[in-house]
Image 1: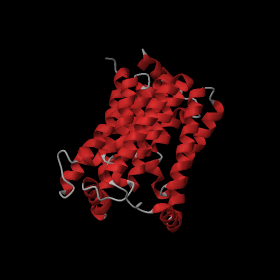
Image 2: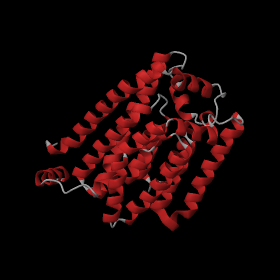
Image 3: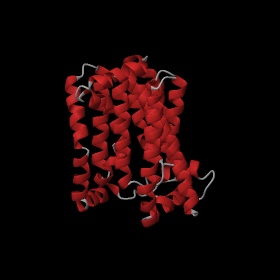
Image 4: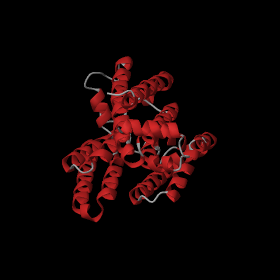
Amino acid sequence: MTRSSRLPLALLALLVCITTASFINDVLPNCTNEPYPCYEIDQQVLAHTAQSPYRYRVLAPALMSIGASPTTHWAWFSAGLAIHILCFLIIYATLYTWLRVQIGDVKALIGLCLMALMMIFAFHRYYLTPTSIIEVTLLCLLLVTWQRWWVVMALVIIASFNRETALLLIVVYAVYNGRLGLRRTGILVALWAIITVALHLMFGAAPHVLGLLGTLQANIARLGQGLFINLLILPLWIMAVAGYRKSSNTLQKRLAWVALVYMGAVVGGGMLDEVGRMALPAVVLVLPLVLEAAPSLIPQARQMGSDISA
């Protein structure tokens, strides 16, 4: 293994360490100051008494409960941290694999750094349960395994127990397969619908934690903070638009439209000051376009990319 070929592995390891340190630095104080969203909601999920939508997001608390209990805070935090570290590894490895095919080695490495920055940014308004990071992990896995039908089915099933937004994976699969994959896309939609309905029937109806009116009122009350957070990530979306105009890749453009619809749902039904966390799947989908808009790299960087490929 040459020195240049070790660079992606070294960067991946460094980013996992930095992301993990940032997670501990931001999330541990959040959980100390506000134990309810970190521990008590998960306890309610396990007891099937949580409000909607948390009651039906059963995957992450179930995994964490294998070796810990939310009543023991240090053990529960450790379980959540372990799942996050595993997810960081998978996200960076699969994202690099996906990006390098489309935009080359050097820009793929830059893409990993951008993704790390976005996750670090998200941790400022983030709680312990790894539902969101599992969603991103499953999406990244789909992007490199979409041609393997049984793997795709497994990912959609897992995602359906994780969060209702598992539908995003199905849409991305449909984009990749087009009309030729309509029958299989229909099967995935049916699986998602069956699992979603089954979870609601099994655990019963639950009042929404805020509801549409409550979400609107909360967003208005924190409008300044929400707008400030969204302004911080505005340059990313501007670069995505610039990359869209520059790119001739139809698939990348279709994924950008998926990201746009997804972000519309996030802004319309979510908390504006949590957009950093909820936007992570959309960031993954537009990264090729963001990097397409990046200025030309210095000759030495391009030479490094040639060495890595060799």
